[in-house]
Amino acid sequence: MTTDGFTTCLWFDGTAEEAAHFYVSIFKNSSLGKIGYYNEAGPAPAGGVMAVDFVANGQKFVALNGGPMFKFTEAISFQIYCADQAEVDHYWAKLTEGGEGGPCGWLKDKYGVSWQVIPDGLIEMIGDPDQEKAVRTTKAMYAMGKLDIAALKKAYAGE
Image: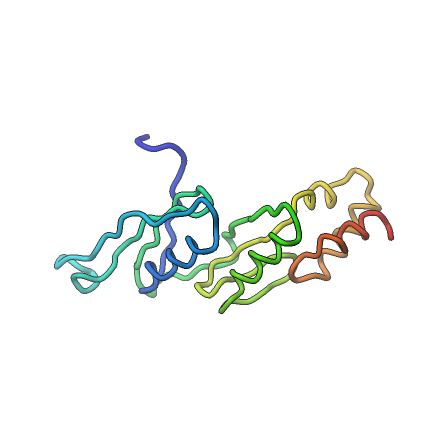
């Protein structure tokens, strides 16, 4: 391989550059890279943006203007692990702007990309060997859209 790691290619219908700017504005350790343009060979008009390289939170991406043939689904999502409620609130607010919140910390941004905004420690709580704690926490999570860390911890503690 000629690079370290993988690059995720996201397929857009004319909004690749806009989306790249959007994601770079939300996450730390982010930057825009090269922009490639269609030429006379097509399939889009020459001079239009074909692809944009960008890094979001240290992860490499390419935003591709591929056309209307393919859409994003929840079958693929990006997980954002958050240290505290302020981070949960930040990412939830930014990514649901023009998008929509979903259940259990899931959301779709305005481009249709699915995200999971997850507080650190949640996976351990819902996977706790003490089934009573795990079930209480899981039930609390199922009742939420944006995850509330304090409420999850109360459910875990049995309060």
